[in-house]
Length: 305
Ligand code: NAP
Image (cartoon, rainbow, N blue to C red; front, side, top):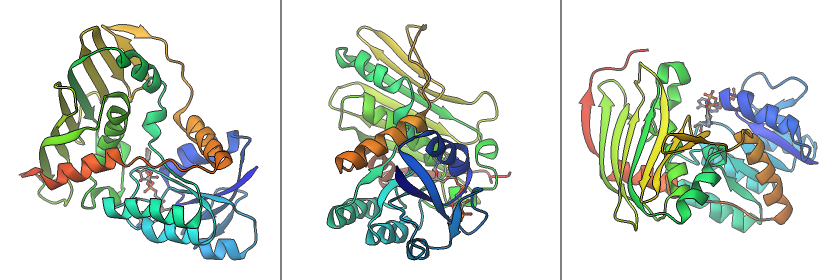
């Protein structure tokens, strides 16, 4: 059993990490690094240092705090000899995220930079289906209402986040299933007049294949929510829906199973720890950084809850 702690007991820790650690025989949740109430039956500490001083034998930690402020946490975790799993997006900046891998290597620890949506049921079947087909066009539609999915989360409006918090999930899927590397060719970012992060974005991406990849992110979707990817190929159109949990080809559903993303994520973390191997792919985060770097900015009306 790997004795694990969680840092940051918020929505994702409660909804996914705590139940999936409990359901995984390779892990035992021992402690939480939190400023608030810990999960029941778990010891709580305000810092990783305090937790390690308590001598509970913690061996690994899942970082579930918002992306800003993670560098100090990750450094402290490696200083104390912990293996580390990081929620997406990995950090506040690309240079911070790149440092994580260096520090993990220096500390000889396992680092798992996770992309939970890559564990969605249709992602690997989609990879296989696309492998021997030629892409003609790709369309990503990621539209959700921030008020419903992120109520009261002030951190989501910090610079560099906004609609890219859900959007990076779509980028994590397309960087897995499409031939790469992908580059940002054009980016339009729409900022509410009262927020320092975009509420919507339109991107054009290009890979080695001539097909254009059109991406639409909207954080102000009032009607039906959608997390869809469509890939038109020489052998039919692949559709991934509901965050790559469903797959269809030319409108005909394909059975892909329904194993939970975080069950697979923790199985993979246990395998990485057993093999003493890290998994750090920053490709989705690099696309976000480039979208900001070359993005044309416009202002839209003020955001209201
Ligand atoms: P959240 O509900 O706001 O929880 C974040 C937790 O981090 C807080 O409850 C707090 O825990 C801790 N924290 C430390 N410093 C903080 C700060 N400056 N501001 C706010 N919280 C701080 O956020 P979340 O939705 O769980 O998201 C956390 C991470 O998981 C993000 O990177 C997000 O992209 C990712 N994620 C979220 C979802 C989702 O559906 N919500 C899905 C997948 C991934 P303590 O009270 O314990 O200190």
